[in-house]
Image 1 (cartoon, rainbow, N blue to C red):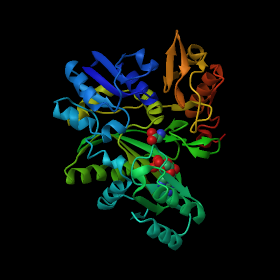
Image 2 (cartoon, rainbow, N blue to C red; image 1 turned 90 degrees about the vertical axis):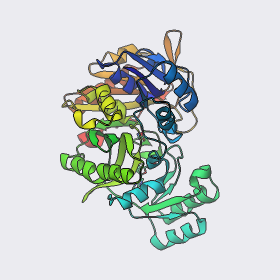
Image 3 (cartoon, protein in one colour; image 1 turned 30 degrees about the vertical axis):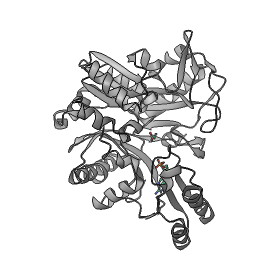
Length: 423
Ligand code: AMP
Ligand code: GLY
């Protein structure tokens, strides 16, 4: 098979790493890719959002399957454009990608399908939103309806913070049009998990669970990021929770999308809060998580491409996903200043030494190749994954690898997985 992956982060490096192992693969391209994917595939200088260019390239190169990594090209309709050109794509249509593109859409789907989620109201009028806050009080969660680069959610612990969020999103329009409507919802309490399912429109296959670490600071402090690290199968993702997640939050959503005439194909990522009485939906994403992807795929023992191909062809029931026993952890190395302003261009040394630690795979997230070496070229720069007999060993190996890296401008959280292993 000739495969094209779209994207340039650590998630896409991990997808390329897993797909490169497939006996079905004959040629792998990544658009635009990064120095990590360059070692496994041919990078193509096309932007992820260049839908026209991607379709043209896929036709010219007779691509059998396109695998989009990030949500933006999906929301922009890359799967629809590829379908119109007769090219298979493992990703949802723009209509189905609204599960991530609009928080109001997600909540409407959840209500229609009786998916357990936080009680909510939608507002297009700031004054009405302020009045509602005074009525319900804090803690409360305010969400800009549209895509806001992961920054559109405010979990307000005080009423003052909640009013400030409404003012910022609806009146000061800090997220532009994405904040024209907001969802105000009940604050859920518990441990979070990311649950992944491979979907072929009707059917879903459990594809791993992980816990992300979203805040930049140790002890879950400071601003939200894209994700500072993840652990595979945290202890609060019990079999019962995972079964309920599939039955109560994934399958009903697929059914509702079929009912609406916009079946969902691709990775469905349910962000869940495990409350005392079970998992509750926080949000859907229409793609694999990052750094969850770099954490889950190293544990996958069955063939990824075989599963993606079956899902893209609507034959998901014919394949299985198998995961190794043991632990997996990813620690993200970021440029100092992230998620705020950061510098690029500093040299990273010691990648070979770090990658030589047993069980370790280093995925490039934001690097640039330079005269045989690598320079930092993003906020999240490296995703250092390690697998081990258990989570504790995996974490030890990941931090040992990080200890071998020599990058003055980099930092990471030192407490990834700490709550899960109880140290
Ligand atoms: P999002 O940008 O949608 O991924 O949301 C960011 C984070 O906000 C989530 O990972 C949760 O930690 C938190 N969050 C969102 N909705 C809720 C909620 N209803 N209750 C508690 N926390 C929430
Ligand atoms: N790590 C969370 C996400 O990919 O949205």
